[in-house]
Length: 142
Image (tube, rainbow, N blue to C red; front, top):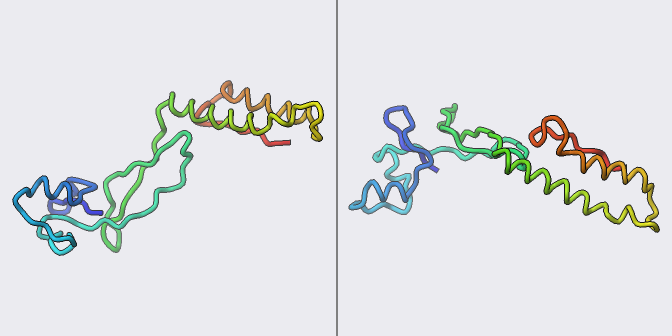
């Protein structure tokens, strides 16, 4: 993964073969871009994994790569999903947990039905929690 620089300032990231061909339509590019990278104002950006985040309510997005001790490194920012999407995701997770426990409420179920009923009610109450959907306290199974 490359970034285009002007001096020491990154002006485009990520930057790859497609962008190079658009900028240089009459130039043949080698299969290994590292051969011409410095000539074309490109620097290699070392890939790094995004930090841990809650995919139901957040997403990771690229930010300007950071210059580290061994060159440029991919950098990330964790941002909240739009409210409607986060609400939908949390409700889907809640509904999945409810469906997975339906069996606990049959008359012949060999479990503490009252305990499971309280757990299921706590799941139903999640949308009314303060901080929903970004700050949810999930109930613990009995």
